[in-house]
Figure 1 (cartoon, rainbow, N blue to C red):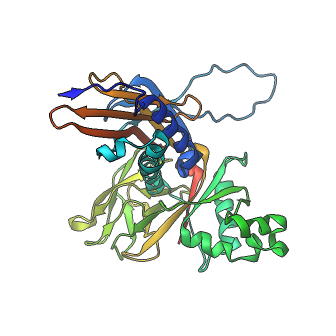
Figure 2 (cartoon, rainbow, N blue to C red; figure 1 turned 45 degrees about the vertical axis):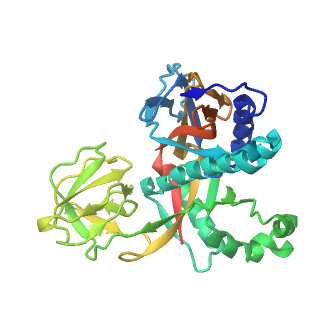
Length: 383
């Protein structure tokens, strides 16, 4: 049975949880740059919370009647519960609190930050718009991504970001337009010192080790037709007259003839007998589609089974990260959950011992969920 140890003598969950929270603020990559929220009530894995979707307005000729504020909410499932638990020997118990934080707490918090970023970067599969970058990357790749977001109505309000892989950043850093005085002025000289591309072409750029690799499907005949009536707002469509073998992977894209909206395939699908398949799509169907309208699939990356890096140009409101507050009233355990109402981040620290073995345990964990709010506010930079 766990025994309660006196808080403040060696391990104080309140102090460490808040230090970890501060560390998360400074070390998150994509998670720093998306819409965030949390539910202050205690939650557990699988809980569903409501997150308010940022409003989008259009100007009206004045004078005009005032419109009631009707908040729109999206459900986010808190299905990501990750953490790390370690055991401590008498030697570690003799360390100072700062040493424990530097050697153990900080690496554990970094592992959680890393996992949060991985779950967000996987949302590339919901994004229908793609730009295949040059080899090596060129200025034209960034301006092409800028053009896509401009065409889909993404505001240039200082909330645009560009997540790059290590290879993409390397190739851009080698360009005079980014890292030399004659191409970028004083900012280019600064880039040589700090390795950061800074803000370019409306994007606040950053490199992320968690940029995801996408492996395209194996289909070779990429044309089919719509099957039956598919209503506006549908999150999956039926395709007929497709090839009799091969696969479409989540993250490949498609377009319906006569429709300017592109769609990301959200389900991995193997073709059924007779070439009939059902494919999940993002965003939901923009307009009703009927039988025999041509559907063309694109294997992202170029060809069957090609693997490609999925950089992301996105607006803050394209994606959401929502935290649940883990309970901190566990009998017999020193525990504290730190939550920041501004950044909406939450993390829990625990310390306990098992009396029978005198084994000491140190644990940190966090509970969160991610959601694509508007896939048309993002564009993939495919390498």
